[in-house]
Length: 406
Ligand code: OVV
Image (cartoon, rainbow, N blue to C red):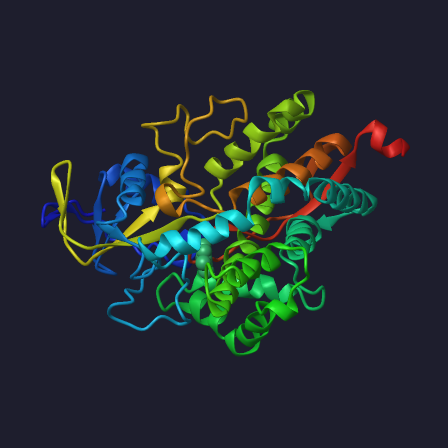
């Protein structure tokens, strides 16, 4: 780690997107935080921060930290985006407010709450199927299977070929990184996946009672155009699948590797919500989002140049010792403090209530039936330019006495 001051900024000579770091980021996060609140990464000509205070400040300061030039490494004002930009994510106020309002209404607390019995029913079934197996891959059998079924149904996507939703999620998130092997592999599938996704976003392809139909109803009321409605459905399919799959996989991994924490949760199921936030903090599914500075920005002792990308490294910020005691420890009983796993400010995850309800349903189904989550082989991390999660998680689930009597 070089600490020469360039433009007053500590230089961090690292490739955050190197495969070894994507797989095992803890040491990179630690070094990033140790470099200071803001660092310069020469390899990409970008700034980065792993300090929770800076990441929060940047997310909240949308005027000086724009999303409209893309929230990945690519600056849309210099290179064309790989797909038509998102009209809710990759946009600033005032345009953002109109689309955000439509999306927030479609995902209203009432609409989400109405889905809860269905989430619980599917979660119970999947956990019971998992218990019946001698060994299973936690990623495919639980983490992916659950959102594909319940979120797919919630949006109103036809059941055929839903695995393509996963491939699209990988594409959207991996496209946020540099032109590396991970990004190229994900985008190589675009020819097959993108037209399929576009077709699923049209009004006539969606069920009559889902989030998709609710968004298209806003078009019928004239709040957005029909084309904009389709793009907002695309946002649901971009952001709503891979992220919850990653969260569930990380949750299973956290408890498989921290068995004492699982026993604590079993003894105190009222900690389910706290446990979810601790998983999001400790194993943040989205590790990095970017913003672009629209002017030079003074931080404590440093100036960030204008027209520069800032890597907001949420994975690092969520383990910042300035906020959390023993930040490197997974502890579901720690006092709840705000993390940035869902972002912060005007772009904070609009679907987080759906996501939380999904994760809570599966976790509650596990707590009620599973005495022990045993790692049955080596966990394999998935290389993701923006999402940190597992590709494979061999597990053996041990039933509680009550569940084995059923
Ligand atoms: C990767 C991502 C996150 C959130 C929203 C979207 C994409 C979008 O396409 O709107």
